[in-house]
Length: 306
Image (tube, rainbow, N blue to C red):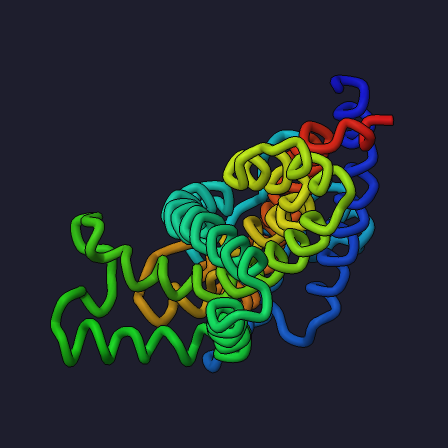
């Protein structure tokens, strides 16, 4: 297992390096700069700023300097947030995004796997059609539509929950953002679980288990659920990283100071280092979660290791 994990870890580094290079040169190729504004700076001041941030150097030299900083865990200073480094901004927003995204994925896995398994066990029944109809609705309706509807219903009309913000960090402030993030993931996971569970239930080893007289509960939980979760586990790696760092719309709607808001502000302000820092951080999360998925995959199916 350790040898397998080491090989997967080494294989992720070239991908991460390509991601960093593409993001770096694409951001630099975009029109405008971090010091452009409606009020133009005097040329000598702008030249001093560009020299202070090494923007007057050739792109290759800037890229090499950035890679050296990354090896030391330094994402560079922010061009717009004065007296803050990108690392400090990421560490400020990431815990909030991690909390929202982690709770959303936990809810999505529990509800999605349960609903998908129930639909597979009652294939072509009313329950199956109802679960799939709700799943298609969850996939079809985007977050920026569902979130205002939830606010309108539970915050404005019923007055049960806060409409936005984190408040004092109470659970009530997290309910609506977490549900808004989780709904599309519940839909995807339930459909994946249903399709995989139906295929597994038709396998020979399931028929053998039933022929031995094992209770249906034991057949489902001990023999069918484990292989049926393989596609779900594959999906969870990038999905979890995407939900944690990509909840831009939800954070904007609910006024949550997470990592997504910093990314949007960095893009609008042409804050090169902030955008690069979030992109690289997101890439690292993708690599880490995919590595975890590979290891879990190997635990669920030992043939993967070979």
